[in-house]
Image (cartoon, rainbow, N blue to C red; front, side, top):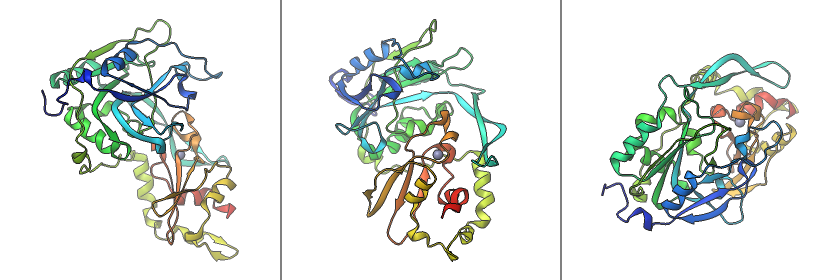
Length: 354
Ligand SMILES: [Zn+2]
């Protein structure tokens, strides 16, 4: 038995996971448990989508799965994840290209954020090469082609089970560890890394448009043992910014130390330490959640004022305000197109309402 795998046979171990029978609109995780064989059975099924809202992609009606265990009676949100018993990785094989157009402000002027579209990588990752690598390690794994798979643009999902649960806070380190020991680093180009780092992500079970054949690959073997003591010591790299984001960050560096000086309230410079960001966002028409105590300060989940720029225009509670006594508040959005943005962007776009 390989050193990275559990000594116990896979079929004796029970994995916890969550199902979302109604698909993308289903926000209530249904807690489930089963062995690797039961999971294989789920992945072997071909599922028919539930009804979707008019104009929505039919695949959103497919039942979903997450290898996360959520706190009882909560919703599918990052802060409700307790632990994860496996890895679900989407190989999208996509890369973004700029269209030459820019997102626009509410007043119609263009922002500095380009509109992008996804195209297939010049050298997409194929399921056969990933499964070949995992087979050489003796790892239990399953892969299936997804709804959007095309002969000239392969898209598939990979599942690997863990022999022990990983606590939610160790997830980014667990992902780094798994990619390394499973020998998947050379295939990372096909993965949308921010999606895999999202611990609350739901993945659709297998289904396809009429007439589309779903291909599947199943490997029997051991479950991956997750050494929690090792995970504690792993440095998790930041997800790199896109080249256009790097350009924006570089261009504004010259004014990093004084951009805030132009904001005044009743003739006086704004005291940013007491700036009421929840109120500012609400004044912008953006939803803000209830305050929660967080690491000696306060945290609010928020929506994003620029949600229309997210992939598929997803308007979720991806934003967060953090406030610690005596410090400037922090705002950020978890969507990767907004990874470079913060309080300065809020003020520069909407500071007029101060
Ligand atoms: Zn955003």
